[in-house]
Image (cartoon, rainbow over all chains, first blue to last red; front, side, top):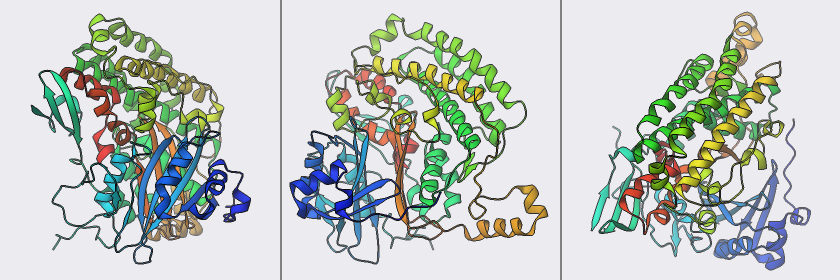
Length: 167
Length: 384
């Protein structure tokens, strides 16, 4: 089974309910798209992530009412450094889509989506804890897995696997 | 009053700390504090070859190692575009359903014990022992199995394995009747669970609950049926859904799942195809021991895979499977090298834990124990 080359043309992918609706609502929201290995990825302008999520949640033909996962990827040393990744699932239609927002390394911050899905609460805290990305408007943005007084963000690529304390 | 429950508390099955704000016996707030078992597995994965990550996936959820093996292997296979032979797929389904039975039995025993029904525990662990023996037969390990490999499964099951599983599968529905006799009609158990820790359908979806916690609140979703993987489309089974949204509903869902799982095991045994157990991809899959010792080419491939791993084409995938606790997802990003650039584990319990406060607020302290039991938490998976 050979891998099919990814599709990156918005026009070709418009038939997907999520992308069709986003382009229809506001074409400026969509920065780029990729359809690879049967999965659709949409890059969203970072200022509009909450708006895009709300549009998809309220989409009547295929409501993406379930936030399956929220995480982050660190592309250090390239810039924009961080990519926050949202995996959405439509429970009635069993459709999936992946949203991404690119963030600069210097002041990584993005609007929280906890007002769209309360489920984002723990996930955003985890990303804040392990990557140091701030989520504005989060009700309780503090460390979740690491101790409160921990220094550094372990999942950043410039954080050594062994930690800093090892001789 | 603020009451600290845990991190060492018999009902938290690990090290979960709950900060309860109470007024008399009523819970006003319940804040989970987690991270006591955080071992940085996601970070460790980035420093390993793809095939070396498989043993790490066992360790995040020690009650369903095979499910995690499967989710990870499927994700990497999707990245590679690798086709898995039917026998390996069916073996994976068979082992996965045994894993589900194993996990549900531990849940049932400990959940009932938390609520005060001590006997069930012993019955459940009797059958669990049988399942662990099956794990030991195929992999040599009772818990940290690492039986699935990228491209297939590690070994052909030993002689007599299928007959033993068949015997177990024929007997097991009678065992489930035994557990149900002890609990389902038991007025004390029903009194402790019915109407307790209610979670509405809207809340369950909004808070990201998954698995039996979601199905117990009336949402009909099961990834085995709705997004079939590893050949699940060939199996017939029902997805138990309850609409009550309380502890008892979740209990009924899981017990019904035990029966469905054993049905899948029976189907897998009856239709087990013959053939290879590993994909035909010498650059990814280790050669047989026999070949490795007799053929130069196989020896070279073996040496290359062990010493430098195998490169995976750049890209990213999210592969979710239905674990005993819900949606277990692996998000893997590859940058084209032999080490995963990023491995994120979407843990079912992590999502379910968020619903705990909703369930507990307004209830009694004693019901917190029932609520924790009903979402079937495994802290290894939450903290990773």
